[in-house]
Length: 244
Image (cartoon, rainbow, N blue to C red; front, top):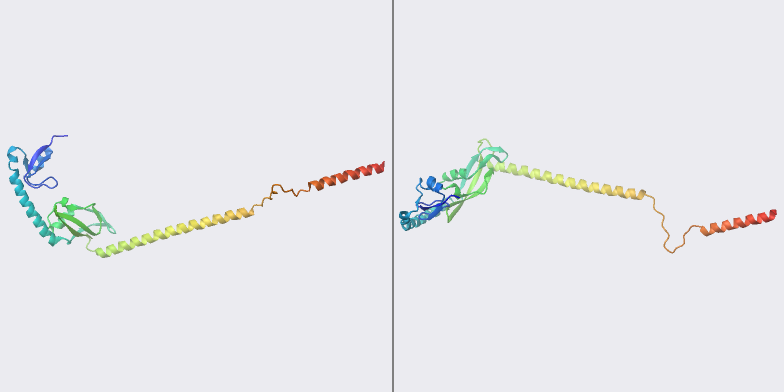
């Protein structure tokens, strides 16, 4: 990692420090950006002797900036800015809108800010109305209303477009719900049909003969058959004696 160098800020630098602060930065950043734009000087002995003077000046400037930001906030907070963009389909934009476009729109109502002062979570990709938070000062924030419009002059109004998109979405949701319900009903009917078939197959099978309970005598005529065989044998024997 390259050795960092100490610089004395002679102007406020966003997300780095305020006038009179000594900060450590990469030498290339100091050489290519801070020094050429008069934002800082090398923090040598001579420069450090200016710290108190610069800090007093910075404190005074800070108070003035805060007062100006508060005054501006009273006039622009809640105002509406508009940005026109090309539309690809329905409310989908051909491209997207970011902080650069919002900064340009804010300048039109007298709000001069850096892109880092615009709080945008993600780039905007649809027509519509949005609320954007802007920091005029670290202690002063405002909210502006942003309308993203179709750049085509012959296009329907924003309200008409949004209403049409909402109706289309509701129709698609209703169709999905109906399809889901139909699928569920079809599944239930199929289940009932299979259950009916199973019952029919069960009723067609012959019932098994009941086994006699343990300890009960069987209904088979075993003894009777044995008696008949004995009678036949006796009759045969008697007939033989008669013949003799």
